Image 1 (cartoon, rainbow, N blue to C red):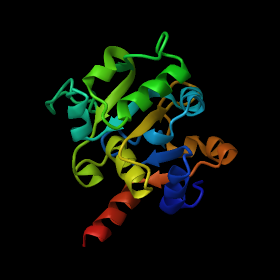
Image 2: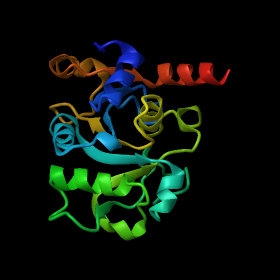
Image 3: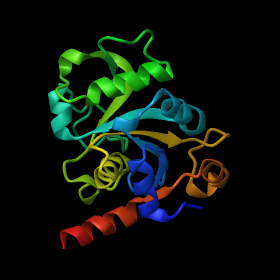
Image 4: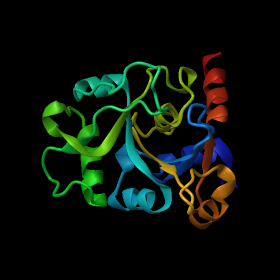
Length: 204
């Protein structure tokens, strides 16, 4: 089903294309579309809204979240949903309603820009930041951390846009549900277990 596994996914991410993340251990096997945040476009946001249909989120590192003045909405673990949400954001300038694909892509670009601070964003908004663990998937094996680790390995920065994939019947999709989507768009699939293995080997 994949276009060649982890290496194919890294090549796609490096080239600014969308890939699929599978193997999230904290969300019951939900799968996500991802693109490196530096490569986000209105077309990529629209693809995620059309084919993913879940919540479109921006994965950022703890240090970047701090620069933006963002913190976890729920810092405890007892009621975590599997997504480490900060408050939603909007670009302070350059958007209209904020929810169009172009506006959301603009908000992402503003939020990840070098030197971006809390002054450059407003809340609430239509982009949902997720604050990853500093240790990445080796600390927390979820799509949020995986998206940042994949972007880094691909040389595409340290932020990513992700969107969970929903089936036509409204249930959350599994890898076996998206064969047609993968084939139609040549999507590479990165499995978190393979990513962990790659990173553990690099540390050995």
